[in-house]
Image 1 (cartoon, rainbow, N blue to C red):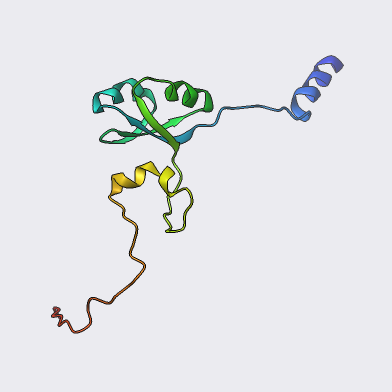
Image 2 (image 1 turned 90 degrees about the vertical axis):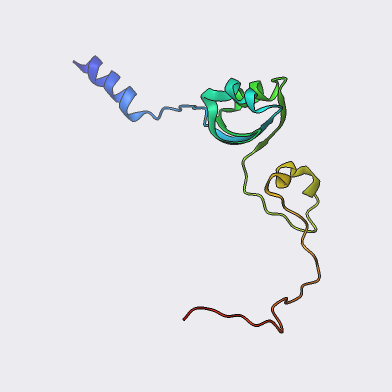
Length: 118
């Protein structure tokens, strides 16, 4: 009986360290929309040749080596700034048709008449 009690104590009260591979979202640009089928088990969403995938670090390394993968970057929130030194690295900004804003602002509503309901 004491042996079972001792084993129970070991498994219940000694902390166990468990390592798990956590999945992260990545944006992958492929050559053709037909290439998306090769990534199907990982696909979260697609827009043309851009694919959002949820993968572990090992899966990410394997995907980045595929011959039809053009670019791959972590799915971070993109904030564009005029003085951003990494602006040229943000290749997916072109997908949303983003352009550098003009540094001179002007109010285009001055002198205009607006008519609204109510």
